[in-house]
View: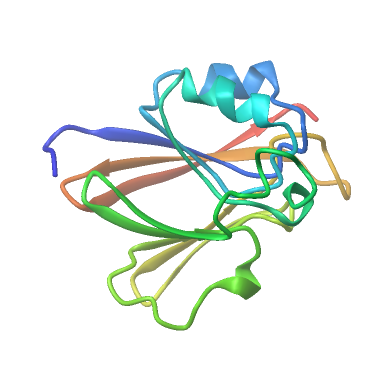
Length: 157
C-alpha cells in the first residue's frame, strides 16, 4: 500500500476503436483497467505503454486470437483496493468477501452505484457509440486502500 494518490482509468467495450481522445484522458493514470470487448490485441499493446493494465475477455473477444485466452473473471489489487472484474455483470460470483469494487462492461451504459459499501462500476463504452448512448469512461482516485473519487468522462460520439 502507498500513501500516494493512484489514478486508474476504467475502460470497456472499445470494440477495436481505441480513440485518441481516450488515450489523451488516461495520460495521468498509472493503471488501466479494461472490462472486455477489446477486439484488437494491438489496442491492449498500446494501452500498456501508458500504465499497468488489467483486462478481461468480453463476449466479442472469444473469436480474437490473443484475446480469447484472457481471463473471464479477474481479481486484483491496486493501491490496497481489492477489485473483481468481469465483462458481464451476470457473471459476478456471489462471494465478494474482501472485494471493494466490482467492475463490469457489456451494456455500453455508464453505471456507478454503491451497494453495501462496495462500488459497482460499468464505465460504459469508450469505443464506438452504440445503442444511442454516450461514449464514456471512468477514472478512479485511490489512496491507502480507499476509493477517494469516481469520475465519469463523456466524449463526443
